[in-house]
Length: 190
Length: 190
Image (cartoon, rainbow over all chains, first blue to last red; front, top):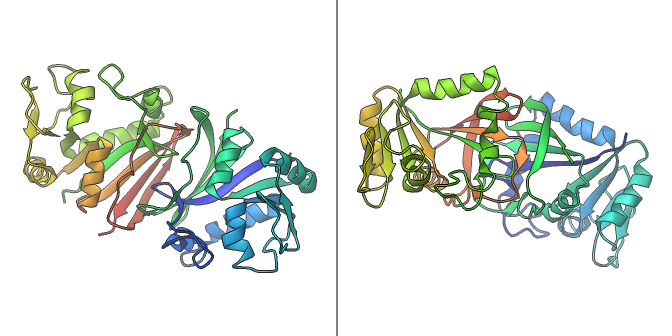
């Protein structure tokens, strides 16, 4: 059955990007450190985790800022996704990119559209932090996959900054102990 | 050789206690959830992790607030530790407790005294968050043991709130995948 999945890389101290994100540094200051496990120190276990996400996802959702700094500017004119991709945004950009659907009516609308497109596959909420927090607070997330990176960033963009629904219980489903990262998978108990 | 160890339980969203810590609720509001793995859901793996800390520690260091709310009030008149215990405090309390040494000259002084007492065993920096942050920022921590609990607390006392020495690289040494908690052990690279 189709699930709503968050899968994101986070430093041990809770950051998913560095400070001062911009088109020139989409991951913020020194933020690329958080993704080293996908490139510099990648193991077969890490590859499997990445492949699994792509193979099981039928649609992907990104926030407006992530789209702007990471996708629209860095990969101008083409979608990096081979599945339907949805952008939650305040206004549809003038220059639209093939493969993206722009949604201005918020997370419930985007989830409805993404669910139709995903079919039996999962809906992957990619980020940024604001969008993930909105999905968690709306109790729409079924599974939380945290790729916990062996570093303290000290500052940057926190993943869990505005969770406002009290304690959220998690059921651990899997731990993969790779080299530069620990892949944690939790079911969110609703 | 003697190492300086931080070993502490933390929710997936980075909290080591709830909000509004007091003598009546030493772990803050709902903060005892963070320690459920030691009681309610304890496995043999969890017991081994706890035993290991106690067996390898030759001295323990706590901050003034932790001492006040958790130890002086909750366990009035007796130390819960069977090893020398040091309290970092602004002033020596009127009512002193046997087994504790009160240090008013800061973390370097306390580490010096604890090192002498610990001999070849480890020095365990127990908390709270402020003291752990001071030790990390002073580059005095050799090993970080995080017992990562399957819950989002939403609010409370964050462990990594004031790390101000830039990125701190960690080398993962061990992952123990228990039921309610994941025991992560890292060497701090200096």
